[in-house]
Structures are given as C-alpha cells and as structure tokens.
Image (cartoon, rainbow, N blue to C red; front, side, top):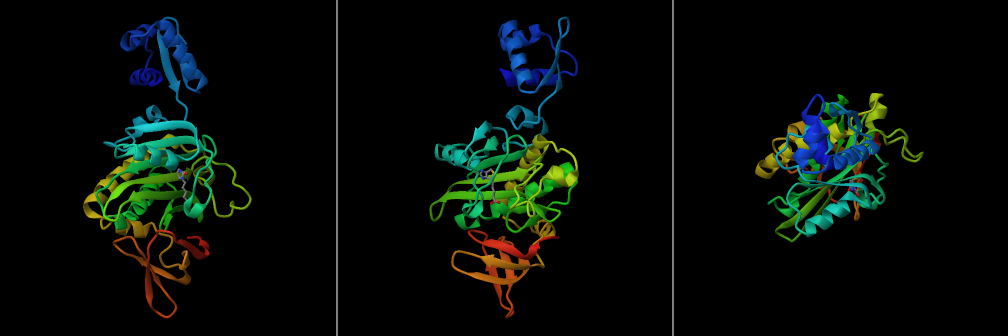
Length: 326
Ligand code: BTN
C-alpha cells in the first residue's frame, strides 16, 4: 500500500485527495491517513491540507523499488528488487534466491550489511544509508570460463554510471575495482555456481561508497567515496538506477557478442594498463608490466625477460607497484 500511495502522489504535481487514494486502493481514508504517517516516519515529506489532500514534497534517498524506478530505463534489471534494511550479505541472499529459482535479473539491495564479503575472503563494510550494496542474479547461456567477463561488464557499467551522475573521472583497476582520484570507491564480487559445461547462476555483488564521510585508519589512504571526491552528497538512488541501466545494455550485448564491443572503452577506463603490477595467486607471484587486455578479458603482463603471461581474474590479486594512482 505504501508504494501504491507514493506512486499516486508522484503522478500529480499538486495535491491528491484522501478520497481519491482510498477509492483507487479500495481502503478506508483512515488507512490512507495512517499509511501517510508511516511514510512520514520513513522520512517522506508529505504536505496535507484538509481541503486538497496530500502532496509529496520530498522523498528520502533510499534504495527501495519505488524510489529507484523513476530513474530506470531497463526492461528487466532492477524491475524486481528485493529490498532490506539490514542483511548479512546481499550476495548470500541473491545466491539463496537463485538456488530457489529466482528469475534472470533479480536484484537484492540492503541499506546495511552486517557480514558483507569482499574478494579473496576479505570483509566489505556497508555503513547504513550511505553506501550502496546490491547483488544481481543472472543465468547467461555462456560457457563457465567466459563468466569472468561479467565482472568487467559490471565494472564498466559502474564507471559509466559514476561518470554520468557525478562527472567524476571514474576508472577501472583490472578486473574489478573502481577508482576515483587514485582511491577505491567500488568493489565487485562475482560468484558462480556451474557444472563443467553449464552455468546454473551467477551473482554479481556490487558495493559503492557513495556518501561515506570517514574510513577506518588502515584503509583511508586507499579508499574514498563519491561525496568526498565531489565535495557534496550524491543521489544514491540515481547512481544505483544508472548502474542498472548501463549494466542491462552491456549485459545484453555481452550475451550476443562477448566483450569485443566494450573492449576499447574498457581499456580507456583502465588505470592498470601501462603500469607495473604484481600478480599474486594461490600458486605463484610475479611482477611485470600490464600491457594489454585481451578480447576475452585477460590481463596481458610482460615480464622482465620479455615473455608475456595472460592473467585470468579468478583468484588473483593485482597490485600496482606504486599504488593505483592515475
Ligand atoms: C571487493 O572489492 O573485494 C569486492 C567487494 C564487493 C562488496 C559487495 S557489497 C554487495 C555484495 N554483497 C557482499 O557481501 N559483497 C558484495
């Protein structure tokens, strides 16, 4: 009922009468009035006049379905958002729902995560109402070995969205960190369940530091947020909706054509290319210069002896020898 009332109020610039709302929704005027008060408790600013009815003055910057949808231009990504105030991890929830048969493009969003997970077993912190934490479940008909391309697609989508909404010069540290002014603003955790030949589901988890004012001492030299870089608050719902808009376009193209159509752009967004990197995997560690990214999304690293190695994103950590400054 809350969402229906918000949608009705939004449709009109002026006031909507309590009677109209109760007629359309088939509920009593007292029920309408109670729901309006609940919305006010949730930071909606709604004016009321005994003669004219209700008028929506301002909506909070929350990441619910009803708040994100005005900014969406997608067909399916973000059209079904499962929204939580608090959750352990949106990736865990999206995984559980995918196991139970969730449809392609289902989105799980939480305003706060208590056990957010990063890559390589790291912890990812999502402070309440100031970041974005969401996961998208997809089931592309591609080979499991091509799935890492999805991380690149998502990175590209986040980069485009940040550029479009804030004008900040967002870049990508291969494969999946989004960097602004030399510091990380976003991480992506892609998790897959597959058989040898066939993907059952993939969960793409995205954490974006949007309006975070302070970072812990141990990471503040490498982490930042969009508002710190821009010097003003950034609309979280616009950023998230724009990521969905960009992701859907890129993902539809990826299913048809692989990565080839975005590779030029992806390379132009890269802070990794041309840099000295250290590649750390479970089995080995080596240094070299990142000289290219293949059409399959592999990082080409030139070693000191002149030989090259193609690095798969999987379980590797790529460190810039001198940070990831641009
Ligand atoms: C990284 O940079 O290590 C990846 C961080 C990914 C964090 C996101 S927040 C939403 C989703 N849920 C999680 O538990 N993790 C991802």
